[in-house]
Length: 327
Image 1: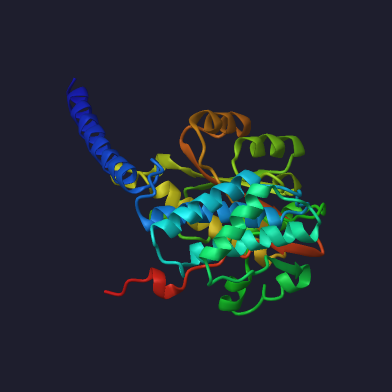
Image 2: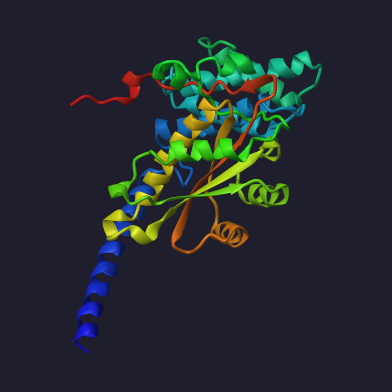
């Protein structure tokens, strides 16, 4: 009886604290994210521009780019750019300039293929050109495989800057022992209080890969080419209190970046894939791979040996001065 008297109040206190913490997370997210699609700040609009232009630059670098791909996205991007112009936001921002760059590249790509885009697209792009003066038409990157991996044994700065997400894979199988070497290197990534929470599901069966990819958003056009999928989870049973509620994501993220570097070191191309899905998809993945309830899925990484020539989305980055606040 005394045990029950002790444990029940303790559980009530923990539930109360967790509820307060999750309410704090919920309120901050609902008030400051763009889930309502209000676009009432420049950053919210830049976030949407980035999503749209990245869809297009990924399409331009697919192994077999489909002519006319993404036309609805193009029209949405143009609408967002016009909204950005109307609000008189910063026209030299990376997100806005690159949106125009990718639009121009999209049109140029189809012109070279003698493919007629919808009149609405060509007309609206022409109108945008009249409203914007500072932009250029960059190209998505194209590499020979040897050039792409040229710095895999260089100093860390050159190694780090040489890695890009790759969505072009060959049909050459990666030996399991090589993949295990990469996992061993990634396991050196930091873990919360050294609690070793990372768990890895290495999916190699063609049938199972297909089922995993059906559940994940964002692999269309290239996911089916991957030699291997890593489903990365974290064991939440080792976390001790309400303040640990987000530690699984931190640990999975650090492990995933270490894994991406390890794969690059061993001449393997890779692309991280989000696990931002609905409940029913998460439950289906758990059933498919036998993931227990005490593990939280963080993300998926696709990988494979690369073909002789590969195309990479340029995906420009902000300058350090734009993201650092020195206090």
